[in-house]
Image (cartoon, rainbow, N blue to C red; front, top):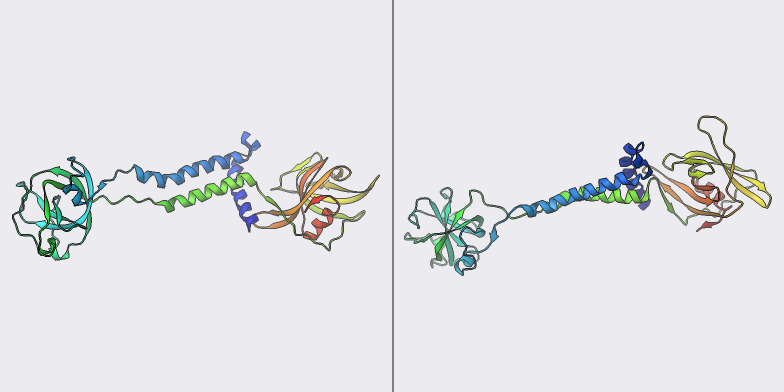
Length: 325
């Protein structure tokens, strides 16, 4: 499962790099994926940063106004409470007025000047969040208050020198749409991983076919390869055909690899894998749609990954060289 996930990441990175194969960036194929990943990280940060650029009112209570914690005229505030319509003007100036009773402390209230008359009946008033500017003004309420605006018949204490000028539309609390950051952030992580792993992905394994016998003298085995075999090079994402065979050398059997021509022409000569230092690693190559047994070999003339149709075929070749298990 991990191999398939890494292969998907590598495939995405290769798709991003594909338009630049004929440009100088082809020498460093991971650059386009890295550049796009940086852009996506910036895009993922926008939903997290932009809400904090939107100004917000100061969250206070009516009690803060009474206690003098907020005194500066023009302060933009948000208060949770209940609005009860007033028939008479408590300031002597025309307008639509209401009494804002604090949600937590029902015996604290402040006069509010609304942009439009409040028509909600006193019995139906619910707690709401209002925003507006504190304005310096003298207030005096002469009319009787509805019983709902009192605490068991006791009227609230009203701020005598401040009113709140309500906004036409209350400013809602700041919300951060963090789910919008998940898709670009996830895609950026996949591109970063894909730029690191490449495509397809080789992953070492310890699973071997213990019943497979080494490839014998004169036996041939078709396979595919990506990498370097002598002067021949192929990309692992577009592997070429190769014929593996065992021939007799001056000091024993030697494993050789002969790349196969795609155009039906003359095949290049076989390249000796053994005969000197040789290192191998058993594993699997994961692509988006398939996983195939693979053997990574490094020697004096070969630095390639060989792909096989079956695990037993891979292990027959692996038995002829020194591999990390």
